[in-house]
Length: 255
Image (cartoon, rainbow, N blue to C red; front, side):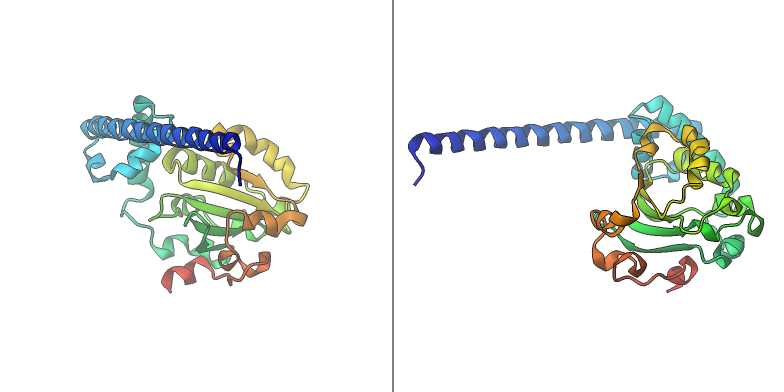
């Protein structure tokens, strides 16, 4: 049986914890209210400048706001550039399979399974990429849709200079950072060869601070353990110690 003094200390500690939890909850609610207010202000602003903004939902506007630290002017400017880009890049409102046929034929992209936060997982085999086998326009137009965020496993096993495509890498960064902000959850870079670091040093300065934090270099010896921190074994591909079979993106989309 606890002594009265010990018991009183435990009650006091619990009271402090409850107070802290309550303060955290209030702060989160206040931040959420601030975000919602700014979303409405941003919506009014962008709709006045581009009628096409009326077709965009609040979640999309919130992503642009978060990407610009809730600065309405900066977020609105970025969002309006996105609308202009989308009219050119995706004029029909969707991407037809034949438009990315070269990309699909390489069987280098797989999208299936979800992480513990229910975000879809993309698996990309970088060594299967060769610049001469596809067009830049196809690369730019192939973007995930229907989800707010996703994670990516970038498998660099067998990657060499013949797979290097700086223009494609920089184009992908430009699209993710400026036109699809806050879509990317994490990028796990695995089986990273030493030669890749030369290219990484060139790319790195073009990555904004928020995006830099999303890249995780995984050592081979800690591969499965690191991935299991974010992905349940049942959702992890078999080749990385999980139970999920890989299916090419075009086949998984059609199933």
